[in-house]
Length: 288
Image (cartoon, rainbow, N blue to C red; front, side):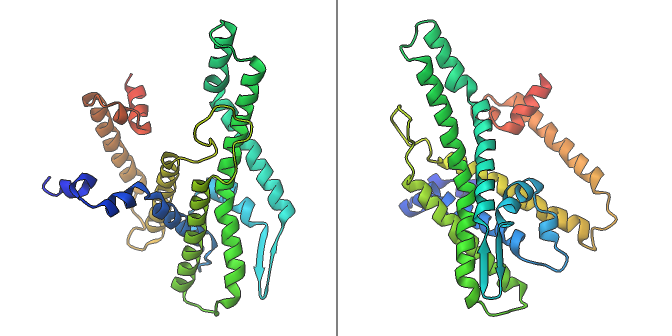
């Protein structure tokens, strides 16, 4: 296409633009978290934003955290005991997840190297490193979930007394988005500064607690998808122009076309990066 070159970063000879693109998560994640927080906290007449919000994020992350925060006229309250309890539960769940997903690479492969005299490391040392790696990763991701929400609580507590009562929903939504944006931005800055060291990890290199740009990009993709999906569900199920439309058949037809396109892409491409995409990979397994 004629305009395709304008969508490529290489077309623009601008160091500032390239720098912005390299650090795009500093804008994208705060903007998405601000929208997510606004959907969760802003009261609406029908409560559609909360009703159609992702059940996973709302019931497993936001509800356990925000249920411990109360805000009233000239007072705010945080149930630190309940918050700590939820924090420990999230750490334990994520630690179990990382123990399962890294068992082969972080323990089993290294154990067989020791067993067949291909490594001089001790089994006890391998086990310790395996457990520490899972604990650090779990705590790092838990902190990433909690920090923007805790900072949002702090900012709301400090700024709420300065807010004048208003019935303008747009004003309240903008306020919540700005709170979420600021909190998420501070969280990303803290992540880049590596405040907490990876105690006990013997192999040098980057702090394993540091969340990479690629990891944050995946989080951004997921949040963006669920935000778009929630807005679509609100529109199709509640807008008067779309009532009575059989969306199940339309969505099934669209999905069929999408799967067909992915099957064609899977057959025609030899690019490993394309084939590693979860959707393309899943279709590839179905075809095989």
